[in-house]
Amino acid sequence: MQVLTKKKLIAALIVFSILGGFLLLYSFNPSTNTFFLPCPFHHLTGLNCPGCGSQRALHHLFHLEFLTAFKYNPLMVLTMPLVIYALGVTFYNFIFGTNHRLKLFYNNWFIWGFLIITVIFWILRNVPYFPFNLLAPT
Image (cartoon, rainbow, N blue to C red; front, top):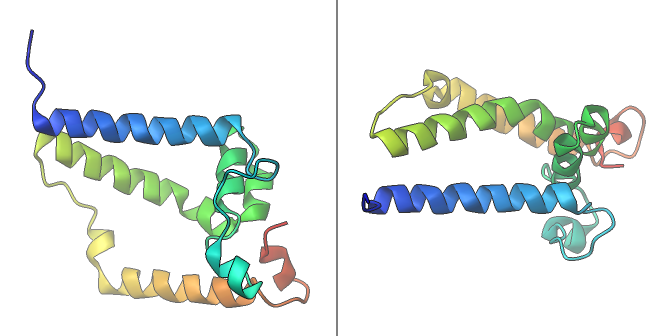
């Protein structure tokens, strides 16, 4: 029997933690269950942050309800493929000791561009007039 290395044990714990979170979000709707953490920014200010609606959006994504997920947080839904790819590459590098990188993540224009898009999204989703009110979580 092969002894688990520390790196493989950490990887297994990460995978099981992520799968546990996925199972939790798949099984329980954050809209109807109160044990999910509320957004502290929204709680304190009454305004929506760029992440508001993400828990509910993930729940609906896991149920393949893409339009409903998009209504809760369009920015998160549109960036999910990029996040999944980045996490996959990071996990692959961790397991196999490689150094694969997506050069896009290391370009200043991408980082600043994404920051600017996020700030604009944050501002516009708090404007109470049509069509900007469509960006707020429903």
